[in-house]
Length: 143
Image (cartoon, rainbow, N blue to C red; front, side, top):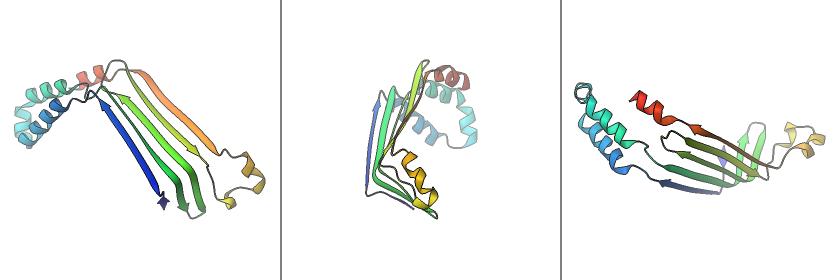
């Protein structure tokens, strides 16, 4: 069982290609069967290319307060647990980031010998990312 009395979420997007994405949705509705889809493949490719880079940048975070996970061996917890993520759109030099931050970590007492509890971290802050990611060339080749 996963429990948290408080959840917060934030999201932002910059440069989202709303009109081209809506055009793609309209195309999908109008060409739902395979026969018409194949007949209109050139239009689909054109719409897909027009939708690139899909967005310029999206970022988001979500966080939990007094987070707890009940398991058969006991309860794991954190007083604060947060995740942050971000991604450039389909670009030649894109970036992606992901981070996890937790404080007040706890583990079930019976899981570890009592002498080792002091060795466990109570806070973590892990960040991962990538840069110079060329999704543009890949997407255009796939289309």
